[in-house]
Figure 1 (cartoon, each protein chain N blue to C red):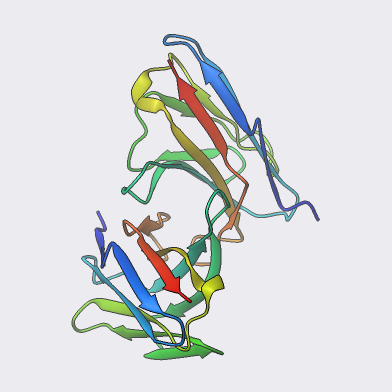
Figure 2: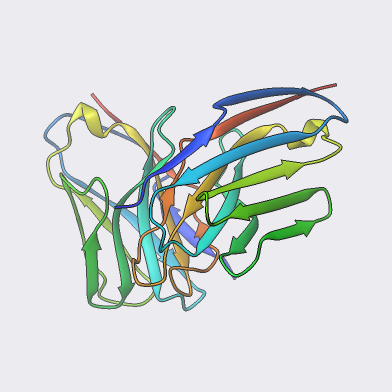
Length: 112
Length: 112
């Protein structure tokens, strides 16, 4: 099992550009989520999904979109990148919410 | 929504001493409390978790205690070693809530 795979590992964008962060898991997990990690602020939930076709907002959803067309994939889209979105983004998956979360290696995103 | 506060934000201990990190939560319906360890530049990884029907759980040098009345839970690391140096995050969730809320993190430094 590869676990949770995130691509790309690093990305630099210009303000106003759009991009998609990819996340895939091979553990047949129903629950998937995206977090952003900023210094001193822990991990903040952006969006989550409890299964294919079902998504919902987390704590900091503005500026991001998600979709869940398959159990395996949960991409995160930045619509119009802003410097405030410079962060490390982690995707995670689990069988359900109250189960251990498996994290990907993260995507380090810089927006100039 | 849930709010999780974590203290201290930094903790320096001598090798062999104990380390204690405390978290408080606001939602009395929360029933799952995991702890994650994140080494520099790496993904968060689960080290121990506890559910609300249990007051204490141990795994070798790591233990977690839960006080539901006071709404706080703590991580205890005994006989600390240099490889325990990392950032530790607590989190809380409830079955029907579908969201895992993290504390702000504690940077632990174990001095040889």
